[in-house]
Length: 371
Image 1 (cartoon, rainbow, N blue to C red):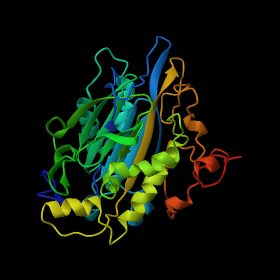
Image 2 (image 1 turned 60 degrees about the horizontal axis):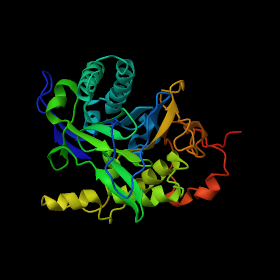
Image 3 (image 1 turned 90 degrees about the vertical axis):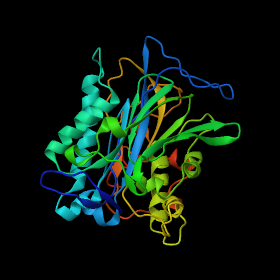
Image 4 (image 1 turned 45 degrees about the horizontal axis):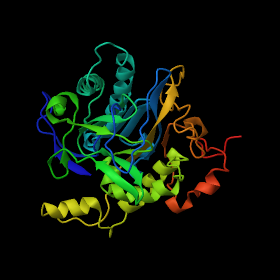
């Protein structure tokens, strides 16, 4: 848990909160990818558009499962949002998950309503308006990462705080981390956060990036329950396990589940030299072990979709690009766009192999194979 001093409000003076951050993340795609090992780009035609194929897995902190944890995620075909709510509000009798969940939900809803306008809002404007609305309904604060898709080969991102995202690309030498976001912090373990009058101003603390993509690039969006326990290159074991020779992820939910389970186990290992422990040493603090926290992982690739495809909401799926790319609804692991653990978390070694999962029926939210 983090200890963070939030901004003053008219009935709270200096709140000292031990917290789990909330993060929202947008990706926008347009333009060309940089040339590296003869890059293959997706080309947009008048009859096609592009979308994310994606799945999200959330593992709440053991002591927070009864209320769904404090992380939140909301996704659509062109927008991925992950939020990690500030846990210290619970000490004031406030459920911080209510703010983070309404924040992410509102960001996606505003984006869907606004995207067809001639002059759409910027990412900062959408996040700020969603922040003010969520804060008017619930006390709370959060970090925020937002990712919006605008074309075949470019990502535009906004990041506030210490959740984040990474881009992974297969080359002749294997998987490489093309980019990994840096946490936005006031000081170690004290990230930027939003929460109406109790948080930072979006325009002042948001970190913006634009990224060129290549065909087959894999996006991972995560809360700090992941990044405090795993470096981005350590996701590759899980990605490789379910990646075909053609660069297609056969199950986005399995990759997300694998990363989430690994972070969960390491977060509870008292002897593990975690990224969080390494960061603590750099600023002269003593800490050993993983950092047990809420965990959220979204895994996505960009794919083609015809303009008449009506599945634009969360869980939408591509019609092609590449042509053998699986649709979300056909994912052989979890059929839900966002899967939240409510019970025990098995080891990642218990997950099926790629060969096994391709011959297996999808699993429902109740953990049973669908007929």
